[in-house]
Length: 340
Image (tube, rainbow, N blue to C red; front, side, top):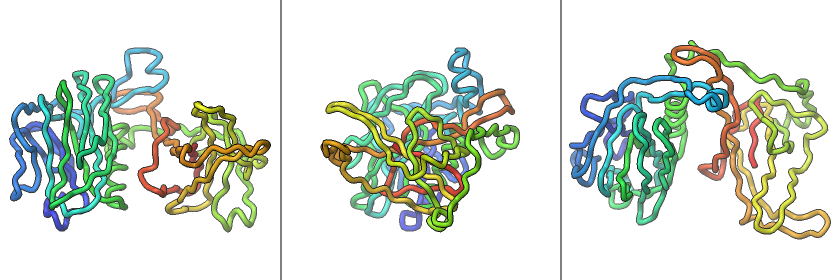
């Protein structure tokens, strides 16, 4: 990472001990790093800062049989989460950056102890509630913050302290997306060195390959609804009768109900924009205003299903609903992706 504030597009920081491993492209931060204009990054104060190095990385099978069958083997540490800094009192981390809006990714977790609950603030607003339910669980979420007067300031608050493994700061674009995509894979799944030892077991679709019409091929994609309980994987193939059908749901006041639709692309669509309108009942014409509708992306990611240690098998499965980070999302080619 270049620390030159005018040239840097993505600033990546790793927190740990003086001897803990430093991930390629990241700047090591220790408990002795206090902010100065010359250094361009550091803590507001070094008082109450502690550092830990959990060492190495490990892939293990959970002892609980249900958890093991549901989630398979999981990583306990990675080259970013094996070390951390703990703060016993409120503090702030500051970075010298040109004035503007930035996306900040925060990574926090501890392989040995149950971490504290704490808040992350910037620009006088609470940005994140960091809730880490247990040891070995990694919290990795983004928020928006603005650099003013040439400085970005991130505050950590909590009655029982806070912990921090890493920060990645940049403006939305391909550079930041590439760093985060690789970081997520390495933290939650496998590094490039480990990937050759693991075999992907792909889901087989119950439907035959889709026979695309001329108009569908020209458009490049089809849209179709599915039941929210249906497992839509990247290899999912829709049945011809459901293509083009509207997404519907039944709801009453005070309820939160899902309506799920999928986009299956024939080619790389680049950035896709989803626009909302009011939901209107067919019979009564009653409406749910668009401001009461939230859009999320059902995220598919790899999960190990057999083996632990150095090799095994994995599948790519839908795991969670993520709020889009911007008004548009990127759609990869030749696969189905869903939102609701």
